[in-house]
Length: 453
Image (cartoon, rainbow, N blue to C red; front, top):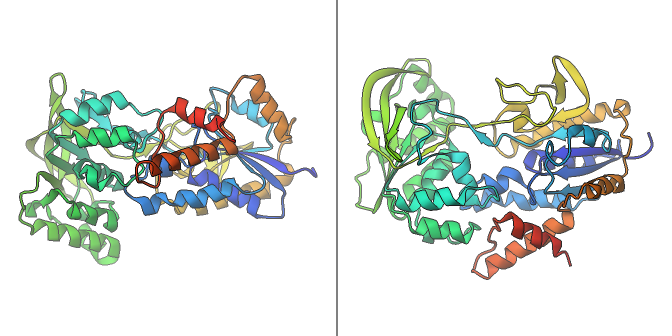
């Protein structure tokens, strides 16, 4: 095979773009790559998961964007695999496929009342304030201005992001790329108390210290920690001694516990050893029943049977992400990942020829953005090692795939279309004194994509 190997990368988040970069940055095997996404825009959770006020982290988009400009790489947006085209269709036009579409759905609490109105997944709330085209605007524009007390369940960075966005003033957010309708809705918020719940102790929380510290630096919100929540068993003490990041987190939380509230209009209550067991309400959630837990000496907790109720007319569940199945691709329902061996997709222990996986849908929602680079590079190494034995595509020319999509009447967003959207968002932001404002409406995104001149 003398022609370049054709590779389809499904998903344009960090894993997908790092995989594309690894493929075209090596010279031993000529490769051309189509990075395919169901959305009209690239970057996945960097665009729609990282909090807009974390602008330094979101700036990784600039690095990812440069990959899409490299020779041999094309972006193809607005194309959903399993709906617009099948994986079998892709095999006719590509020698290999790398699935990097991530883990974008929420994990459930599994408690009574979880489906009451006002109980929402953090994945959906984050999608809304980041301007995702599929976000449920109506729900959040109804809930946020009418809530006075919110409970956020979870002690990871996403839970901290949600808490911070609810606690900040619009003045602390209006420099970001949040859509204007999000800023307008947050400006009408009446939320005065935000309760952040963790079922284990401070030493078991998975915050990063920088994000944690930000909660104590909010303009209009006091942070409150009860001294009795600072419980540490033998496993906790060992973790603090062995892990500097955990020690720093505990130091921050200890300092919070010594603070006297200053009378700011909002309060962030950080609870540990607090496990939600039921949501109660009428036409809407009204309170969260919480069981006091105690550390069991090995890093886990047991229930004490001591129950309290926290008033809440908004509950945001942030207990993790999970992957979902796509089309005919093998899927591990228990682990919510695509089974693999060194990045090679496996079906009942047998390698599926020409199919690979990288990122969260490969290993689960773990690590930071940079973790995905190493992970994607490892998968690409497996693909390149297999290059000579890849099943040859029947129609490997890029133009053939384009013609196939056109024949089906599918309007895709090419690289030039994304670049047009990018310019439009920057212009919209500059008109409002910001670097960028996210365009959230899919129809408008497609309209801007057509304006490639």
